[in-house]
Image 1: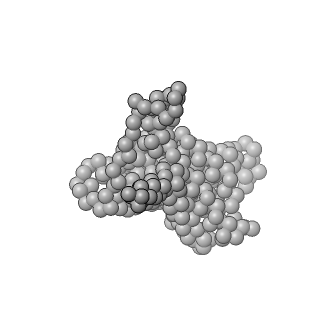
Image 2: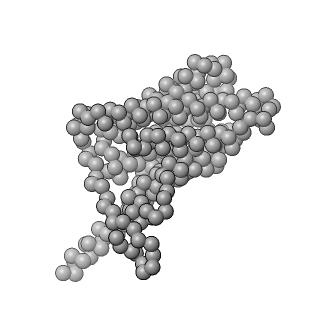
Image 3: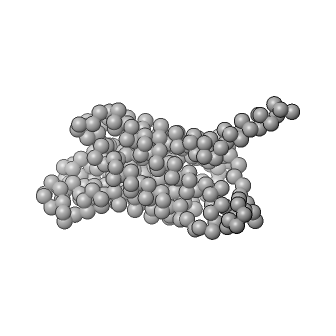
Length: 280
């Protein structure tokens, strides 16, 4: 046990896990790996099923002039944030609870997952999103087509640059929260303050949706945007679809760099080591 400051609460020592190998073909022979991929598929399917149904219900109520009796914009944001909280809680111990290619990409850049696992997770997430939206369309085809299938589209009056910026910043907030909530150094330092990691992650999704639904419908998850676009399959849904891949991936990359090299001071440690050797 050690303390940072005299009189401060004690904390446990921590050790960063070793970086994940870039290529780890041995994973393919492990049931735990395939179980994790299945968990990502099912979690993303459930995520899209619940959230897209909520979006369509909200649009239906607004169109019929009964929005005050429905969930409203706040309810849509809660649906996304709440489902992320539930699903990350359920799958964190199995797959890490990514449920988002941007999160997987950020963790890959930080060497938290291997390239093979990252690719398989993204494929599972995209397929799960398509199936989740497919279920919604199968159950409510008329409403699904009438209210644009919950697809992410740039709202009128906003430029592509604004939409891209909203997706970059929104995804940065999410991935930054993921890194912070799962940081082993934080867990050791703040062990006397129990923090349930899925809770801040779900709140991050909720807050970002409140801010960016009016701009892009809030993507910050390429699988969510891709699944809805595939099942709606309308030209308008594909016009600016690139925004919902490029923006989240840029935001995730910035968050990974910021957390690993600024907050975790990896760059400062490397520079300090260089200076100490140069003074010898």
